[in-house]
View (cartoon, helix red, strand yellow):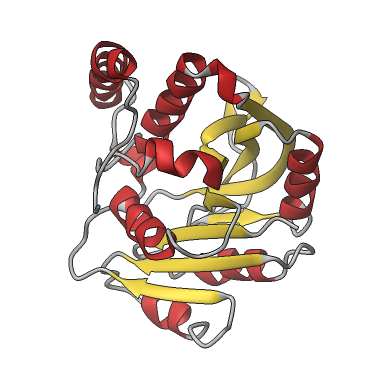
Length: 246
């Protein structure tokens, strides 16, 4: 029976944090531990999360300074690196999972045991109107590494997320792809779960990274630097590990 470590960093999301937490804790599949990390919120987010701190399947952490989502995820992974779990998942603080989501993900993973990285599908909704977001006349429904599940089997090979403010989930997925291609005898594979079982709110506040960073300039420069590091340094050395804390 797979155990899922669900990691949620949060910063100033008081309007949707409780809905996100309840969406995880009320999952039909129960073998889940939720780790919440407050990244120096200035609203009531921490108080909301604190009301769950005595739950046996919830851990609450708090950063001393604002460090961003990926530092916070790494902090949780480091804390739980010697604990028992089978898959970890970065769950956005302003995302809400269907209550059947992890049960269906678990079934898919059991049916495909070679998968060590599984992209999952979400649909984006405007928080204020609760209406579907459209892009080019179509509903925004995406399958993404940003909502992926990762097996513990690859943690010792890849280590932690890149300590960047954005797009470190892309870095992690690309490193995993390169690791699998470089080490085919391990028999690892990647997969996609295409049923949209997660709602991602599109907020217009200043803390929304989706709107804050420019896809046309900042992210492409970061992606290029990551590609170069993977293909010119990591692949030749067969070392894809990012050492953040160890």
